[in-house]
Length: 296
Ligand code: NDP
Image 1 (cartoon, rainbow, N blue to C red):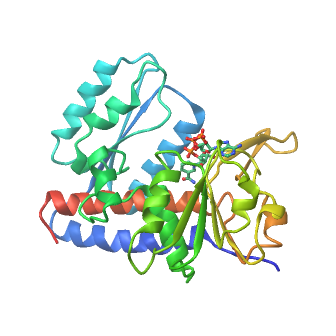
Image 2: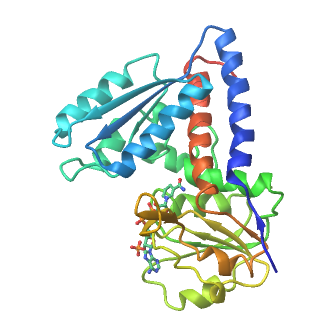
């Protein structure tokens, strides 16, 4: 079998067109959604992520504010900035790019952001709402992006066995929560495997849908995949490549070429889940703006 490619660029373009339409409606009412992105330090990968979020805001007409704090910035300085943005009516979404330097307590940062502006869906209030299936919080950008990829690719999730590899608070756990919800686009039977799992390979091989989010380059190989399974690769890993202009190339958590021979559908890296994450971030910011302005 040769897998069909799930084109995240094309599907995110559809979501972003919906985003643009919503923004135009808001602008006609004199309202502009605003997103504040905070970066502490100069981590090159983080800079890249922050810049691509700001660029997408600019393309769509979202007011983006980028704050770059020194790598030695204190918790107090960061909390002061968050407090200012919490109280700024022109800002509807606030995010602090991960990972911050060690003096920054990420948990405290997440707690400091107003839940109504927590467009990443990291705050316990929003995570709880997502878990019980309430829609008045936010859905987390990457896992929800995966749900939209599946839906817009016409892949039935209901009744399928989904195996999620990885249990981080950002990807694996919320991915489980979204896949198991009792609604027509979810309804999966969910298994999550992680570093303490015994027989990981055998369990993954039972999956109809595999979602890999472990941060290990090309970890998932063809012998772990059932013929015809759907494979979603969340991983973004840099591997050294002296033939590449930058000295490295970006690969996922899935050994793409060989897994594509076994799977029915597969996401590429780059160009799969990545663009969806940003599109959902934009959508969350727009939804937050509508709520803050009491627009249905
Ligand atoms: P984390 O490092 O926070 O979590 C990795 C998870 O994988 C952990 O649960 C860990 O288990 C598990 N794991 C690690 N090694 C193994 C192993 N050998 N066998 C089984 N399980 C293992 O990563 P994230 O969830 O934040 O990110 C995962 C990947 O997704 C990364 O490549 C990241 O760059 C990418 N990513 C991509 C995004 C996108 O927009 N496309 C957005 C966010 C992340 P344990 O809990 O036991 O330690």
